[in-house]
Image: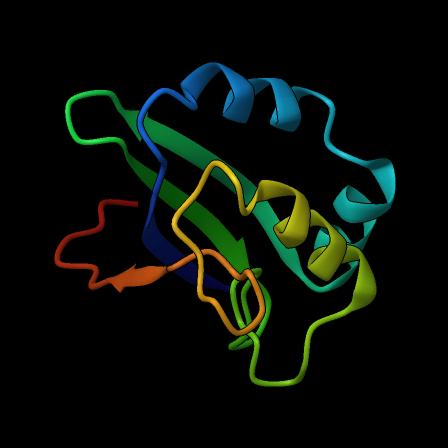
Length: 107
């Protein structure tokens, strides 16, 4: 099991919309994420900086933000829908994701 932490950037004034969209996350997206080996997935919002902090546990080396093997249509559709409220890569609307280095873990 690999722990993966990352940050993304929410556009100012989009906090409620971000939460609203995630409260109605598509079942097929949830299934795809879980089927890809991602579990224990949380996203936190820092209201002072509008930084989103994500954490997930992954089987193997992949994670939900990994685009190295291409992007499935469900994820692409989600990213396209979220592009108006997040900072995204212009190439594919994937969220600008910055991996964070783990410096301490207590199990």
